[in-house]
Length: 144
Length: 390
Image (cartoon, rainbow over all chains, first blue to last red; front, side, top):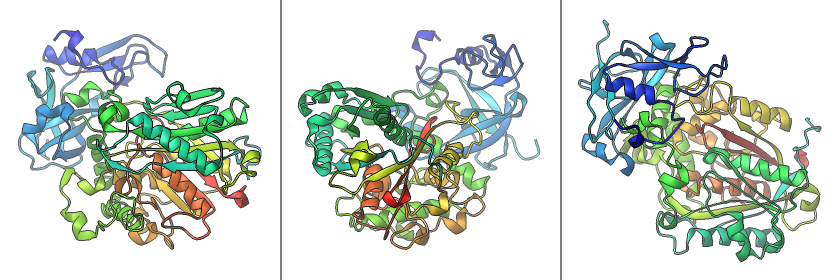
């Protein structure tokens, strides 16, 4: 995706996250100075002062940290109106020091609860994702 | 008492006003005219000439700037103008900035104001969120602060164990108070348990009634030095303390702040109590900014009025309503049942309580809290007091 069409909002140091998804990888930023995971990505590590921030691919598995079932959306995300109601999540990534990423729940809702294990599925860019390749999440059951 | 803090009791609010609330997009006046009407009415209330205002402070993305208002107010000399960062979290901070301008001699008569009208200012995208939602939310269908707040409240309920009935108590306290406020959007629309439960889901655990109103309107308050306040016609509402900021693990972290279910007031409240010399047990009445009910519940917990463990026992309708509740909140109806001018109406009501002029007066109220927007990446809180609290 042409980076000039990226959304402007927030800190804006997240290009590596989207570029990785476009390559088929799930990557979180990490400080090259002190090795701390950083999410959301930023321009400088507030712990060690390094400006050298890397993107490290990790396995897309985690736990549901919290969720909501959306019954309405604003005009800004009107492309999602066809999906209402849909569940969005914050997914906690233990392998990245507990970083929490936002995503949509895919598939069966049974077992939907805080702490439920989930695995990530990369979805191709479409209108609903505003042209971004995204990571969506599936519940993989209590035994996992 | 922290008598050495230069902020404590050095300034006071001596004029208050707000325009009527109009339904979103229905204001007959432009946003700037609403701002002017509120400011002039606040001057009338204070007994001063609008031309004497020499300082202007607002918050969020207020677009009616001092330089634009100046010609219409006949301002003699503009000496100070500033904007507090973030959204509803910036309200008590704006009052603190106004007070600092007065204490440091930069200005003498400072107005803090907010105006919003949908027709001339795209409220949700410009005035409130400022078009600043990070990509990881937008691409996943998450635009509104509502949806992210719903996720936070959900964890507060399911993980922290705060009963969901506390959300209903906050909503019903607002609607209860609105029944005595003919200007409130929720006037004549009482909400009982059945009505709350029947209210449609917006973003679970929030029903429609858990959400703040959409209004057009403006509100303004006038600050002067405590010395000058004592010579003026209204009973002064002294600013005892205000705290703004964010903790080490907070700020803009796209919901990766810690503790996650806090709405940003834990450290701020500690500073507020230390600077004012009072504690949560001393507060008579509180205006708790409720963009959403669950965020107000977390604000009450963060301020130390109760803990997550005791929230179920404390945050009950009977404790939250005037005149006899342990902590009457949002006594004009609040953002949920009165109206929403980005929370500025809550400041006006906090002052009315100290004057004894609220439509739901807490008898003899001496200490009046106003908590800013919960969950903002930088937020603020303020404590006002009557003369005998100084």
